[in-house]
Length: 114
Length: 114
Image (cartoon, rainbow over all chains, first blue to last red; front, top):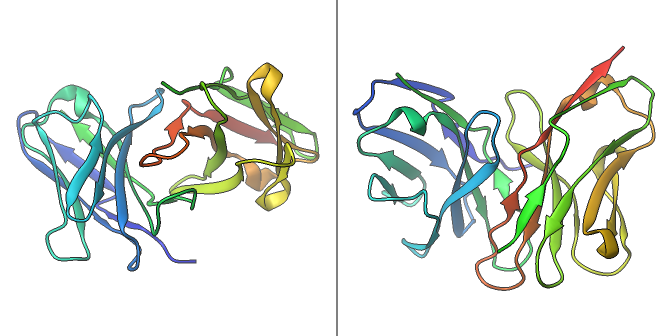
């Protein structure tokens, strides 16, 4: 089965630093998502992306966050100035059509902000 | 707004025993319901989904779930648990139409004793 690939699997950074989390969605997919899960809490929606623009975002996705699809294959999440509370597992997901097709998730990037 | 409650943070069962993981949802219309599993080091994998029709749905790995509208529940069951079923299980509800962004519960961690 095709896979969504996320790198790195673990990222440790200092508070205030910028981080970029990388995702390679499945090649023919058109809709892309970022979710995160703070330890012990729910998996929370951050942002969805389609046709090279954000289609929806949650309250969590403030000005510190941005997403980009720089080269047609990668899908990145940037946090400009990390805070301690950004420590979480970040999941990328993709799918190939609107409707009820299943989301394919990556294995996640565990971000630790010190 | 839709929401999902998974009341059990941890569930411990013996191998071979039956399993039921609880999920309650809140949504104004007919929900689209999902169960995902996350094994250690893996992404979220779809186990099964309910959109309409038969309220008892079968999924992969021998899992099934029953949609009960009167109880706003979508509990996951398996008659005989295997050690390899130890994982984190997430219930999710999707919105009808729109950009289809599933809302997840906090997850239930399944521990299987030999």
